Image (cartoon, rainbow over all chains, first blue to last red; front, side, top):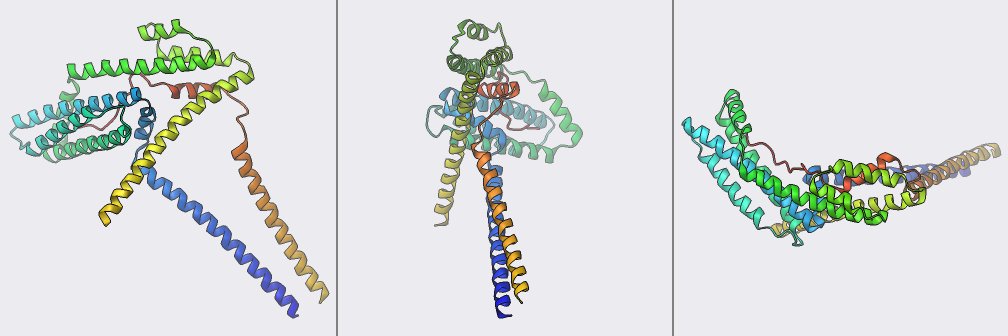
Length: 266
Length: 67
């Protein structure tokens, strides 16, 4: 009888230990998932995607120009809205203060060196500030006006045409074309078919990027299985590398933030 | 008496074999997930990777609306 009891106790211990181990493991997994989720909330997916090309200095230049354009657009819209409010005898002091902060921010973005090692970090911080100032302006104006007046101002702003913004658009488009040209040379290099005429046609605006992409897909699809796999892997490797670099920059940012946080605590 | 001991032992044996079988299965599934190469490359997967290599010319950064 004693033997049976011993065996039963052993069995119970074994069952409880294994269930504890399983529970602990799944808890650990949940914790890790939660950690990743919280980290993901800090930098939004759009920004994550945007910084992927910033490993190339041309890519960093494009993102900084795009940020400048977005700030200028909002500055002009904000100035226009403030003018309208001023004419209607509203107190625009807070709005003007936000706009002057935005102007300083624009100068900061213009001063960033696209080739510097910390351009990604600076870009993320400045974009965050730009979003924050935009939100502050939007909330302030919302407190001043009713829905009808807000819609009126929205309509007026929509019609706004600015030469400065158009110049930025042209500059950005040219840089993007240069970036895409570099990628095209790289891809055609992989394929082993230097299709200069196609690239020139794209640069001259005779064919679109979509047509070029279609041509590339068709060329790769006509290859034999091994070659197709080889090229696909190379392209994928390059894309994964961009993502890894972006994630590394994000991690670096988070670590330096943590460092600052600990510093404050001390 | 002996019958009882035998039945408890057989229960224990069944339990252990189930645990072992489960862990072996989990290990194998994980191994497969990490090691399996991409067997089939579809037209879509190629076009997705190519899309990711380029930037759209009308690409913009959104920081929100002022009003």
